[in-house]
Structure formats: C-alpha cells, structure tokens
Image (cartoon, rainbow, N blue to C red):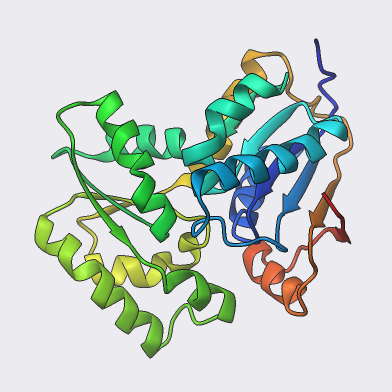
Length: 268
C-alpha cells in the first residue's frame, strides 16, 4: 500500500533518549514531519524481558501507524535488538532500527577492525551490536561494556562534572586497554556525554553516534522508496508520551537544544 510522501515519520523510544534520534532526523530531513512517542510510563526497556520489550514495541509502533506514518524508526536500542523482526513483519511500512546503521558506520570508520560498544545492560546482554557486526564482518573484534550510570547522569544534566568524569573513567578504562579504534555509542542518551567520552579515550578512537547514522540511512530509505517529502512542503513535529514526568520538558530542551514541539500525554 503506497503511503503519501507528505505523511509524517514515526519515531518511538522507551523514554526520552530517542530525542537524540528525533533531533538528528530533524537536522538531516528538515522538510519531514515527525511524530515521536516516548513510552515514559514503562521506561526503561533495558531491564525487561525480550517478550515484554516486543509487546511494548508493538503497542508503540501500532500507535504511530494508526496516525498514518510512512516509516517507523525504532530509536530504542533495546527495542531494536529484540523487536525489529516482529515489527517488520507486522506493519506495512518501512521499519528502521538504530543498531544496523551504527554497525555499518563503525565498520566504515574502523581501520584495525577492533570496535567497542557501550550501552545499557539490556542492550549489551542482547549482544545485538556484536551479532550485527559479526554478520557484516566475521573478522571484526568486538568489546562490549554496559554503562548503566550514564543514562541517569544525562537526565540529571550531569554531563561535564566530576561525577560524570569519574563514571567515564571507570567504565571506559578497560576499553582503552583493549586497544579499540572505534566506539559505538549504543544508547540514545550517550551522545550527550560524547565530550567526556572523547576526553577519556583520546582522539585515536572514533565515536559513532547511531542517531546521526540512522538519520542518514532513513534519508536514503525514503528517497529509494519515493517517500521523501517535497522540499517546498510544510513540516510539523509532535511529541507523545505515556506519562509526563515533572522534568520532562526541561530534559527535552537539553536533548533538542531548546526547540521542543508540543507534547501530549496518551494511553496506549
């Protein structure tokens, strides 16, 4: 079933972190309208079972498809790891996760084929990045680390203080010793900590932001399917959340550099 090129793009995440993907898509595709859904009532997905993550992802995707989106972006790394095949079969729109684009960009950047991955406990336990990297290049060496404190640090706004630097030193020390030359930021919160991560690892390690690479892959997908919005057309954005925490708007401003669209609380 053909979808009109002026229909919106749907993006969902377990919470607020996917706004880094929202921001990257908005920068890369300024003429596209975007509907974002953050499942803030049930965040985090990283501590849930695979079956629960798939069920939640179906509900989030269904909400957006009912609103006429022409493509779905799964901005949650855990949902991308567990639910992507199910969503691709279940919904009649193109579906894109963040894991694949991040892996392709990392392999393109890595010279020594020694790649690090950092993410939430759920994403690292799923080994989604490791499996995807090995599928693309069986000879690649992958070193993964869970960095559970990074998400609350970002949401607290502690992205460049002594606590954030201490956490980065603790988590990343082993990666430095492993000799990686490329690091995938495997959580949508982590790009906000890129500064201190870079300081800890040094300029010799390239950082791969899955949000940016996903936006560029999405652009190619839309153009290849003749779904890209017309340059002259108007665009709009809206954020839906399943719960509206007191600090949501202030955190959203941090992710979106102050340009926050209207927000509506919904029940799935």
